[in-house]
Image (cartoon, rainbow, N blue to C red; front, side, top):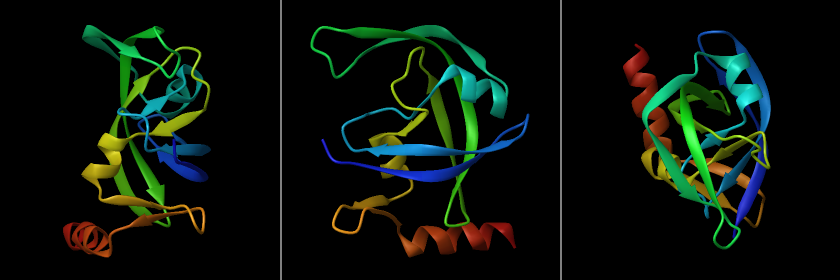
Length: 128
């Protein structure tokens, strides 16, 4: 399961925080620990909780909360929904759904995260 861990700045309604974030091509959803979610922004209760499979065979986690957050990588502003996962093994995880949405690629040879320049240009145009 290919992964890269890098510092990412998260920003929400309560504040901002730099968190070492795992970019994980084996995770569907983007996730955040409850402690970090509370520091960054308003945690919302899901109307219908999710039960998702973990990497451990036959083990499921019930997710009852979510948070929307901006996050910055190389000063490029991105945003998405993060599932608040109790006892998460990492502080935050960027999953495949978020990577596909923002055309994020993982360069394992150089252990870096690559954001499509076209996406960055589109974001900058929206700000003007």
